[in-house]
Length: 441
Ligand SMILES: NC(=O)C1=CN([C@@H]2O[C@H](COP(=O)(O)OP(=O)(O)OC[C@H]3O[C@@H](n4cnc5c(N)ncnc54)[C@H](O)[C@@H]3O)[C@@H](O)[C@H]2O)C=CC1
Ligand SMILES: O=C(O)[C@H]1O[C@H](OP(=O)(O)OP(=O)(O)OC[C@H]2O[C@@H](n3ccc(=O)[nH]c3=O)[C@H](O)[C@@H]2O)[C@H](O)[C@@H](O)[C@@H]1O
Image (cartoon, rainbow, N blue to C red; front, side, top):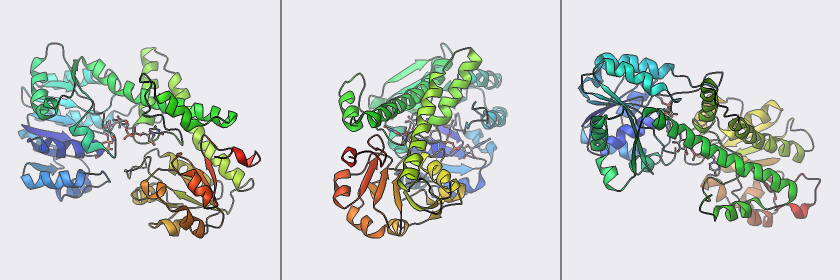
């Protein structure tokens, strides 16, 4: 099938290349000239494991191309919308980019075309877009995307489920999507057909649930810290109950990224418009933000009450491992706030150095972990990259000025680090320096 993917960011670039691997002919369109040039030359402008290979293979078939010209979508019969929906100052979703793209697309549609929304939107938006799309004789489906960055290729080609939101009785839209995803569905992926509103809601509800699960375990981490309980054992024991499950129960610095934070804020805001109080999600967010403050408080405490002029090394800047994304990154937020407090922050990350440098110029960035560690008075591990979890604590000890590490992701082998002479303060286990050292894991 001839397909267009409009918006070639984290979601759209992966989707375009994945659709080619399913046998389709795809044109990716984006307003960002540099991004289009890069993708057209087989260079992925961000870090996503597996995508460079998929992109190269796609381009080699001759069935994948990229353009900045919206008119180029005319030959496609199915158009995926993968436009960014960031948040406005009020927390609501900014739908301006999406509506602009739809307005540009509609005059180019032919009767019978299918427009497929993949962007994450507040419930009710698809119905509005459907009206404009239908005015051109085309149809709309809402097919939310559940991929995780760092696993985007696998998640796109082997999703947990497919949700098609369509107009009641629009069997043709369902049939077209079934054709597009034939190979994925053949492998047994569950597929649900819903109305527009349900499809939109599945997406934001899923992200709200995941965020809630993380904040739940982080609230338990606060209790564990206060009571001396072991948060990892607690999570393991809770996770044994299949109704709860162990996934997304990793306590630590909390969630960030381009989606969970903005999506829960957008959901609260949409709830207000609908007269539904989703205030519990505000609590989810405040628990999340408290973890960042906890790391800062620990750092201040460890450095004798002030970080002014102190050399702090941060290992990890991306919002999670296997990504160079620093959108709403908890690690970068902590780094920025330590700089504001007067610390001299040295930082490294296996992939996010450039993205971090662009958004936050005030840190001393190092490509090399030993360079970053040299002379540190305090080390913070804030993203659980293998490069850090696998770091030799003896080597690290030989480089720093003071062997104290705050493990913001509960990811270090604390016994091995302690054996190498480190004082390890793991979030959820950490106790202030004034309490008994035996309490420190
Ligand atoms: N990043 C992720 O892992 C996932 C994102 N989503 C959702 O997908 C949507 C896109 O997210 P990302 O790819 O992360 O955003 P992004 O910001 O990386 O990409 C959006 C792209 O849209 C382009 N764009 C804006 N206006 C345009 C126009 N008029 N015509 C053509 N292109 C235009 C931008 O230049 C940009 O390249 C959002 O709604 C997000 O919530 C959903 C699931 C996963
Ligand atoms: O809508 C989206 O864009 C996507 O948002 C999340 O995916 P993503 O943001 O890529 O990353 P996650 O793996 O969900 O991690 C989000 C954040 O939660 C944190 N996290 C995750 C799991 C955990 O147990 N604890 C925890 O603190 C991570 O460190 C990270 O900062 C969802 O998992 C995807 O299903 C969804 O499609």
